[in-house]
Length: 489
Ligand code: GDG
Image 1: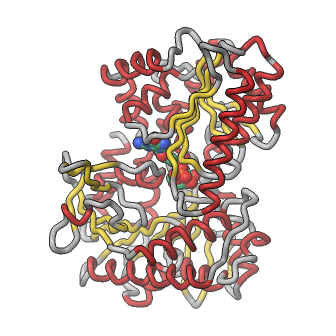
Image 2 (image 1 turned 180 degrees about the vertical axis):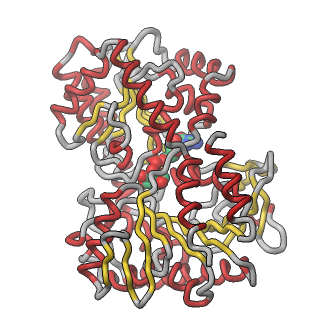
């Protein structure tokens, strides 16, 4: 039996009498107007990509902020719509936020305070009291909607991410029967970093409303235990990996998130993807040039300038590759209302321009930078035509791009260059692991990637594929739901 079936079985046999509720800020499907038509888009976000298959299996309710301009046009009178549109399997309940609420809670506290606080990427967080108040208000707004959806049912609530640090405590206080778990998709910093947050105790109290708190890797769990130990008067049970606070226990566990390996592998060999590979080769005149790729949501934690600088150094040191190698960077912008995001976008634009100007000829430029949101087929095609893929995050909870690259390489070819600061580096030890800050070493690694003997590439890719196949997204869902199922009275 595969993981997908096992997950279905677990849900049907052990959790059948429970309503499963997932709560996240971002919705898995966004409806937008395109002229007179309504389009349904899937956003570029690791969280939604990973959880959608789990929710399809669980057939529960997903509560999220309705952010598309056509979102209201497709919901019923209780703000719900069944998704995915082509094969409805679960309910999406939309929560409506005003512009001020979205600014203060999402752009403000979540993305301009909590995100930089947790990612040790040397970007100082902005702690704005008005944003913090809006964050609290929106957390309680979601809490109300959850309690309304649950009613008198027995339910398991799976809260997603750093947008909702206060929510678990709020719902537990109202309904102590609920089983509440939270998955924190980003790193947890060490205490020295976390203690700069003026509202650290309230945040920890909120999170300790959870029965289970999950992170990607043990390292982040350890940081959390240490933070709780030093910031509040709680008790730490190091054997059980638990925090005891106000007489209640929160288990702290690693659940390394993943991708739908089988689906991505199957997609990679379809005619659609093969036609797209040809079209892309033609569009960018790739001929027999070496091709490197980077696929990111533009974010200062993803190490994109560091990657471009390493490419620059590579061409400087090894000019024989000028004209022979192309690097394609896909970068959809996000959170551009936050100044730091506008800055990183500008920095990348300048660097691309500068490096291209330095090396280009009439018929070639080293970096092709594409900013539009690409379709899943284009992404799959790109992963397949690449000789190497670069993931160079300065800090990253997991990083799904790395696992998607491996899943698409049905030919067992291609090299993954992976930052040691990604959660994924703990699992994908056959990648060429780099420190993105060490530009010279990084440049040498690019050389090693493009010159790696075929046999070695295959051995490494085969092992990485095995690793992701054995630990796919259903495996993650099973691990998480099994732990939650143990908490039933
Ligand atoms: C957070 C954590 C953790 C990218 N460009 C396009 C596109 N993408 C997709 C990728 C991938 C997803 O977006 C990005 O996932 P990541 O894992 O890299 O990063 P975050 O969004 O920062 O996610 C991260 C994740 O949560 C899950 O827990 O791994 O560490 O930071 O799936 O393929 N998708 C489409 N077009 C694009 O142009 N359709």
